[in-house]
Image (cartoon, rainbow, N blue to C red; front, side, top):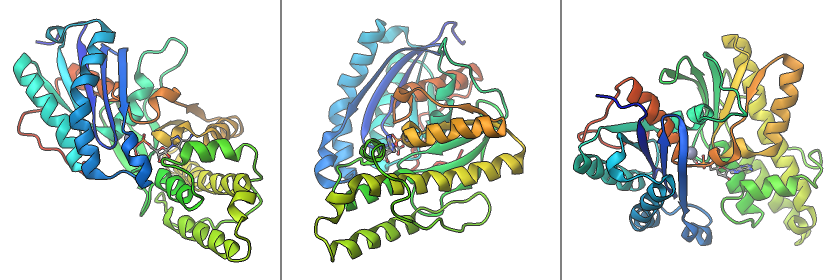
Length: 340
Ligand code: KG4
Ligand code: ZN
């Protein structure tokens, strides 16, 4: 029997952030994240270290989320957790925790697709923001995925286009590593680009048919550009850091924008909502806003706190699944490549 209001505990552990959030219906009461600093020294996420850190963090993070929300775990109506996609070892920690807690509290368990969470974060209650009407074109831009999605309802989504190789966030991070920037490099590239000339270096735009995309060629071209120049001038990166960042960022954004424009024409939808860590990027936000004016698009940009991985976005999917009684079971296994 569904409760109203319902209290959902969301748990996210798909990559390197251990997160927990409590929602009362579609309103976020708390959203807590333990970032895993350990990966910085390796320049990327080390899966085994991520699983161990999730194990250490999950109990304190859930405890903190309940404490800030000021509710007792006995008041929870359901527990929503990330079933995939993501790193298997990381997903297992969150799912095992969610299953045991749901079992002990005798409340429903809800399995959530992480990518659906990145798009449904737009439906988290916010007085200042309009929510997108259906259907809309969803664009997920993260460290692991880059997808164009047709969202027909909260829970009915299908993929129109995908990256064929690296994700856009991965391209930011890998090129950042070539420049000696820390992990993840996306936020630093965004900041440094503000003072750079985006036309200083020309990088190739890959020719991929239809709505699919590719980002690995850019990474190779960028590596060659840097290495060729370093062989002539050892200080090349240092002397051109801002221009390199701005040129890279402009090219990555241009690739996505071209596909968004094509998708709006193909599906005849002018309502666009972006999500995922790269949705925090200031260039993509600016370009989308100006394209919206030019093309009469309605564009939805998520609140910054809900762009990178968080558990509030898992909780909001949990809320819609709770309302439509889409409950999971203890037999559900996590999946590194979970389809929508
Ligand atoms: O969605 P997310 O937190 O994790 C995944 O599901 O992958 O996305 C993380 C990605 C990283 O690649 C990070 O560099 C990128 O989001 N990112 C950014 C910015 N903030 C985070 N990329 C560009 N500009 C930003 N401001
Ligand atoms: Zn994500």
